Each structure stands twice: as structure tokens, then as C-alpha cells.
Image (tube, rainbow over all chains, first blue to last red; front, side):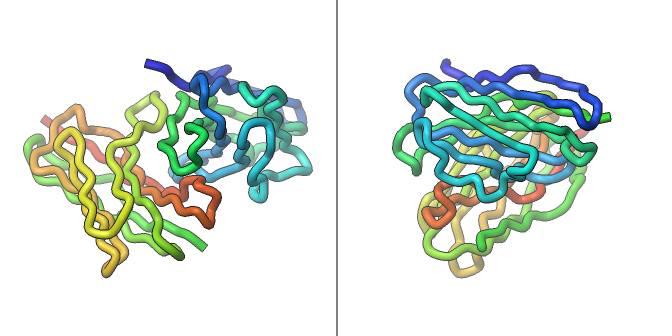
Length: 114
Length: 113
């Protein structure tokens, strides 16, 4: 069964450092989402891609966060510089080209900023 | 904007007990409603969904009915098992949010033998 892959699974970094997360969606899925899940909360959308284009990044803190999906396949989310409040689980999800399709989630990257 | 409110946990039940986790929503238009489950150390998995009013989603003994008149989508199971221990998230998706999911805060369920 195809799955969404994410790496690393865990990341510890010091504040002010740069950190990057990688996501490989299910093959053929045109829509890719990055969510942030703070401990004890539900996931919240950071950015949504349709192919290589950003559809919604209204909740992405653009002064420090960036996301790209250059070839419309895998994606990278970067934080620079990291802050203590960025400690969270970062989840990637993908869905088929039909934007109403079911979203499949990866295992997430747990980030701890010290 | 869209929002989801679900009952706070943790919920602790004995095996074979009846489970209800309440979920209400606020949305414009006609959202689709979902329950996701997150087992310890794992990602989110879709448990069930309903796409229009009065639809009932069901999976693995869990059920939820889309009630537009009460804007609710309560999750129920008649007899829980220890293996159902997880965090459950209610979510909605609508076209006016670009089909991204709006999640509730999650309800932690612990089932004891």
C-alpha cells in the first residue's frame, strides 16, 4: 500500500538554527499539504500545493518559514531561524488531483527546539 | 470561518463500554465531515467520513451521522477494545477553505482491560 513518506522522524535543534523537513507524497497525488500540530492541539494547515504551485499559504509565517515543491512531486519545508515556539509535529498529507479527495497523512516529523 | 469543537479528554473507559465523543462544527456551505484517529507514535488515519446531511459514516465498529440541524458529527462505538486507545480528531473540509482540513483539538481515549 502506497504511503506518504517524511523525514526525518525526529529533529532536535537549537533556536536560531535552520531546519528542513522533507515529504514524498503518494505517487500521482497532485495536492500536497503541510500541517503543524502543537502538542495537545489538532493539526493546522501551513501551506497547500497543487502540483508545483502554492494554493494557500495564508497561515505560513513567511518571515521564517518557506516551502517548495519544485517538480510537483516531493516537497521541503524550511524554518530559519527556528524559535522555541516552533516545537511541534509537522505533518505532510497528499490527495489525488481531485481536490475533494481523501487526504493521506505521513508519520510526521517531531521538532524540538531547545 | 470554519471551526470544529470536540469534547475534551481524556476519556477513560473499561473494555466493552459504550463510547461517545461529541463533535460540533461551524461552517458555511456544505462541508464534508471526518473522524481521524492517531495511534501512539503514528500518523493520522482516516476512520470514517460523511459528505452530506444525514449520511452515516462507519468503519471498524465506529459510526457517526452528519446532523445538519444540530451541526454535529458525534462518534460512537458500541463496545470499545483496548486496541481503540488513541487520540480521535473530528475534522471538516469545505470548498471555501480550499479543501484543507479544519481539525478539532482531539480527544484522547484510554480503554482499560
